[in-house]
Image (tube, rainbow, N blue to C red; front, side, top):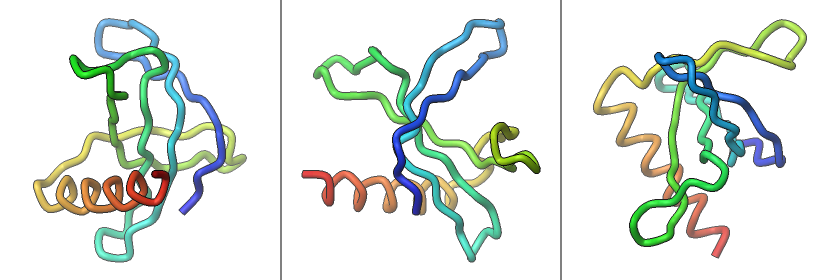
Length: 92
């Protein structure tokens, strides 16, 4: 798992750009995919807690950019939630 501090810009379907902090990335042997967990900078939920998003990704050959893809299954979401909860517990 990589949890270096980095930022990415996410562009939604309407062309709006959001600067996000990458919390960490990880690979799953089960799905044979790489995942990124990120949080839009400055955006929080109604309790003031950060919002978290997840995508699978394929890194570019130079390692600088890549392509994000939506999470496809409930099983993937469950795995991501477990990994995120473990990460947040370790951060406390």
